[in-house]
Image (cartoon, rainbow, N blue to C red; front, side, top):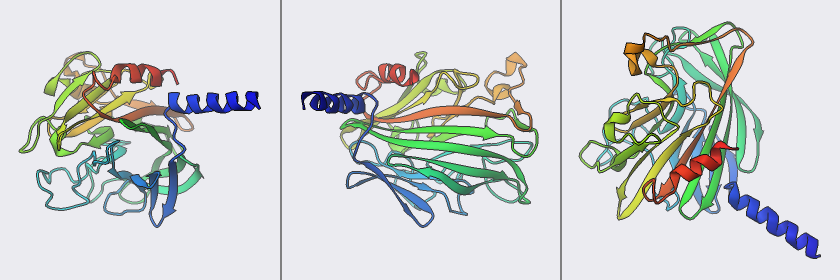
Length: 312
């Protein structure tokens, strides 16, 4: 009996250490997966929506129950929000040049990322298969993505996004463009500019403000006071990722994207080609964490949390 008790205590401690929560569960509905933290909605994975042209996560609620991403284009005429870049849809993965096809923006002759099937749906995680199709419906490549959800404590929750890009049909080149890749459009108060913006930003190298754009870093954070609470979003680039630490397409108007491919924009003086080729049959994997936290990066111990996560 004593051994069983100690084992249960050990498992409980492991759950806390690795950010697991028995309260997280996933429910499938028409065109989306609903992710709950107990009775509260954490987020929705919208995988069947022609308006988005790609699977997205929306809405996303932080640890205190406030939304953490922009509501446009899902909702119209929201106070304090701009209506620019309708393809910046909450949280997503795409790229602006894949064998010459634009999967970043949307419109005529643009690419679409089409959900095919769920390979697995677990308690707090799922894996799906997606085809990247050009404007004529031809498959350019595919990805297998695993997304997991964590309620760490009352001040932190997180989404882990792992995506394996696969040259399943032909050789694939992820071209050198700033328009990519692992992106989020943060809520307007967290921005650095705008009529309700009051945000600050910093990256792992100590660069602050809008100067983080195009810089390499292991992580970066945006934070601000939102309705008397200081809330933040930190995004982690895993050390196992190709070209780690990544470059950041991080704008003062609210777009934040990890982009390992945009060298001609981020470092034009280097004359380095940022495109990456996968020969037919090859694949590569990228891993990211989105940490939603109370407090600024120092008080939220973002650097320590990154170090712990980077060892997983």
